[in-house]
Image 1 (cartoon, one colour):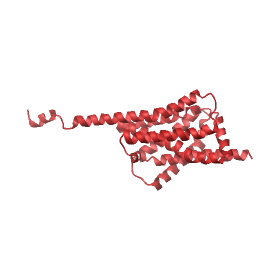
Image 2: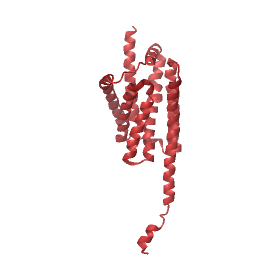
Image 3: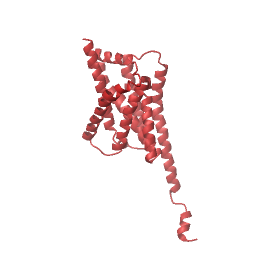
Image 4: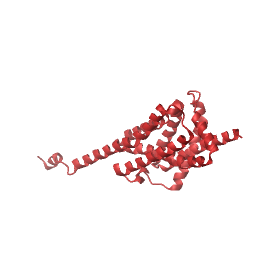
Length: 255
């Protein structure tokens, strides 16, 4: 047999080990994905499905702070020690703080325009939910300035924006680690968007569509730029604008 042909039949040194390592990495990614996302999303769905009353003001402030922050820490630990990647890897591409903030501001502006233009049009197709808890939160923040500081500070930036955006990026990076190429990116877009919408199912179809659309924009931005910080900044600034406007309007009506 010619040497060139016999060489094809010979095992490549390290090939089996390489395949085993690749399978192990995919398995770790799937395990980390399940451990990082199933508990917090199950908590949200179970709590909302079994809650026989409206949430109180302290619950609406401290639930996202405690659960969101704890879930964020779990995801970061899984990313570092189960997936074996440094936390900096969540930023898939290099960037600067200035550019991240500017991109986050632009993303927040897009969200504001969307809420002002698209959401009123959506109300013609899907009835917006009646959400008495939102009014409880707004009035409570007005009446308790300390809670307002807590909500606009660590609750908003850590328990809400950082948790949701880091978990979104975690989904994208783990899925693309298991399923490379364009199909993996498409699956990451679809799954992360659906999960974000599911996390707001208690707001009804209207809330799921609006938040799902914003989530889709965030996913596409991350796939294009590979930076997690603009997503956090854009999310936090938009929520601050949305709740802040409501606080101002309700405060004026209470005078």
